[in-house]
Image 1: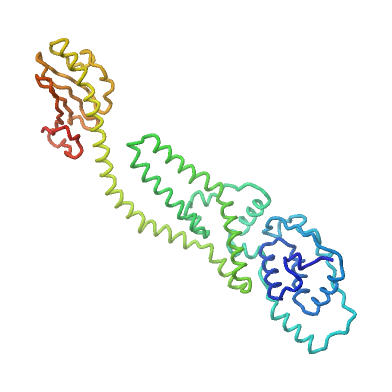
Image 2: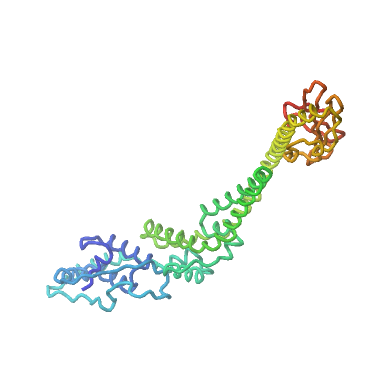
Length: 398
């Protein structure tokens, strides 16, 4: 004889309310055959029938080895052996030979049973309420495949909608995470591209692959886990209020939420990002310019020693071609272009390089007859450079 109490995780002293809650929970989870749950509701919530069932259960040595597998979402898809005991094997409790209860007792017991036995929605109905009627067939099929160990398929709605699809399906945490990650990576990659170069573009490419490939591939699996948690939470919180439970589940999927998120991004986030960019990009550009001039000065200073050596040895006018003059490390100057030199017989002159960004901006290392060096940055017309962007050792000459 099947022990319905054991099947529901209860003891024989459980109250009708506890039995009703356990039946409602199993109906939502779909782990037990619905026919078994119907019989459990009819026998354990009707006082006379329960008394006869309890008496027979005590006198029987039979027990149920109920193996409850993973969640089955839809009765349309059969999952074998949901339980070792078939509904047909559960026999109706036979009336005890004792005297029948009085008419008044029977009426009171029936009234109490009707008051406690409230119809609750089944598992498929709960998931359908969460998903929405229009997409229930697609997602219930996907959920059944995932529960059976299948792989998540590519979700085109998640591909095109991204964070807005997650918001429409009620997964607000995931929606905000995607929006923030993509926005931050795009901003940082664009700002740092000039400093770290290929590394910034590699990070940006990885982020786009995550957003455009990985997320759509895993979207159904993420949604499945979210739906399971949401339904179980609702069953725990509102098992005695089935109408409220369904109403709250139907409110999970909300296309208006996705539209609201998109409008919020357009109205708030884009202007804020624009303000941040307007402030940060010029500051970053100044930082890059200053770093370039500092590196150029370091590279140019490295030429002073070799030039002094050549001048001391030759004591002649040097060619404007540094390589022909025998200077070393000319190839080490990477931040300036068209390196030129011009020195007279007494060693006065300069080594000059032009800015890679602006041909009319020049850095000069000037040498006097005593062999002393100083730095000058030459500008002309509108081709100016702020003093704050130049090395402290250099003066600006217009």
